[in-house]
Length: 161
Image (cartoon, rainbow, N blue to C red; front, side, top):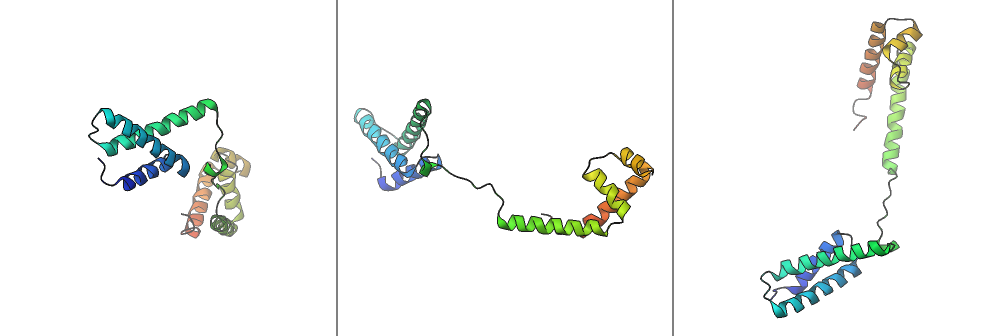
């Protein structure tokens, strides 16, 4: 028959838990799978009992899930996995430091260069629009933006992931 039944049952329970079943449900499913195995084994030889039990337990789990879905059963609160999607305090602090660093970088830019850079990057204006607003050529806009990018990227080096 089966060499190490407790080890096999633990392995099946762990698999069922990874598939979203609670400890209690996994235990019930392992029991039900073993009952099916014992009944089946009375009539036929099971060549790979470990595989038979694992497949049976997984199939029973799927069947139970489908039945619960049809009945519209609600999940128990203790079975639900609640994820906190809020950023960690460390992430918030690091982001604030990066923003403060970026503000300091922008403050070091000449005012006109900063205005042109922000008009393009923040307001989304095209070079032609910026050139018209500031009364300069598109080539000058390109130079201001290149200067700003160079200064900001040098100043921000090591501050971004």
